[in-house]
Length: 239
Length: 164
Image (cartoon, rainbow over all chains, first blue to last red):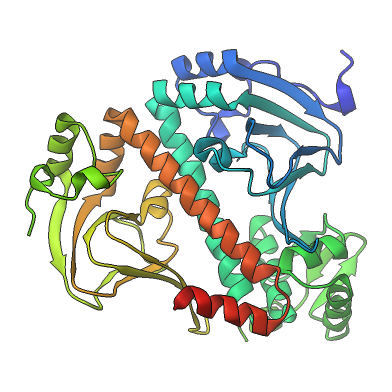
């Protein structure tokens, strides 16, 4: 079957194989069936914008496949990337629940499959299914947790070097390489995007990487980064 | 001390506390009411979450801490708020520290009981979801103000203005 953007579209949540792994999607059958009726399965190319910060909330987006960049913007146009959302996450949740404008901008960085649910439908669905409501609470809690981490790293770190070191160590853990002596990280973001994640400039990130390479803390192999000296990186992260 | 939520005078003004008589009775059964002194730590950042604290009386300072021991005040919570909700529902360690700024009263609800209570009361569950959304909005505002003002001085001023 020909599918848009080379995506293998999952038509129905009932037959989705990835369901069991996702916090939100792993709903009881009854709730899942009514969710099936209110959702719209859509596919987006890379670089599409799902919603923009400040827009009135239309509904939620359940990310089935692909990755989405979540960022916030200052009034003078500076961008800060909060998170790269992965499959299974629900986007636009808090805005849809509270009725306030979307607080982030969501842009796809891969071709994505997204299930959209209109706000009114979603709120009705939550009222009828307390299980789903608890799942949503759980997702919101996790987001809150990561927002707090972001505040901590932005508000309490001294230097860009510290923030970059923390980010690299975080990625190593996320890749499941946290325990290894020389963890490997696949760098999926550009220096510009890394700069936006830690609230600094592209030039600073490039300079910091160059310094780390010179001090043999990290080594680049194509787009893979090898942490050669974890102790030194940890020391950088806690100064 | 207020033994039962039924007799609480503030109930009507507080969105979380304003429950149906049945729910109030169920809530009374699972909560542990206690009086806490000034400076008492309700929970510390990083410790395993045990449950939520409904703040009946008093103000609470919510702050986060860096590994180096630097502290950042997030906000001051007022009576009627529910603290530790996010960590309790997700099962993660508490993400902030909560310290009493003045003597007060709290109702503690352990996690298992809370989850069961929310499952039985969809209306209150929706309220909890709404509260979490508001918390999240506040946190994002904070990220924006801290993360996007480059100059250290501007950042400091913001932190101070919120603290005062």
